[in-house]
Image 1 (tube, rainbow, N blue to C red):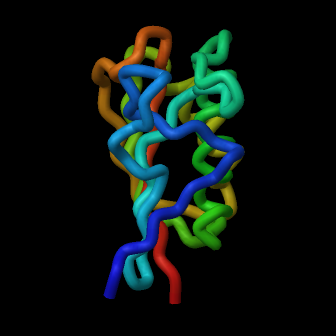
Image 2 (cartoon, rainbow, N blue to C red; image 1 turned 90 degrees about the vertical axis):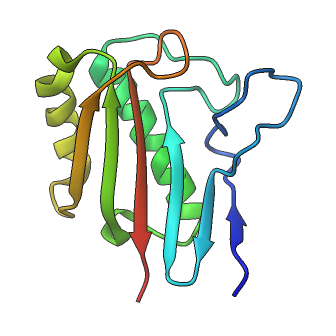
Length: 134
């Protein structure tokens, strides 16, 4: 069974170090009944620049990017079973969590949230996920 590469024009592909070269990763890969979405951050899909704003603004942009990739792969939040989150500042967790809740309040998932340093200056949150299909 071959893996299928999934991409959305409505979300940036992360993992680039030079905007003139294609990134070495896929936005998502579907393999069988699973969809693995690469880490998304608060990047504007058109400019690939970090959106200005607090953790709520960055979380919404990040989750909107994630939703765009899920949609391109034929999934919705209802298909998501696991989410991993990196917060630059763990003190942002309460405000991050309340924003996250507005997206996932009807579709509970398993989640890991850790503090760390995302790869790009100004990125305060990065989220990836795994979705399943019947």
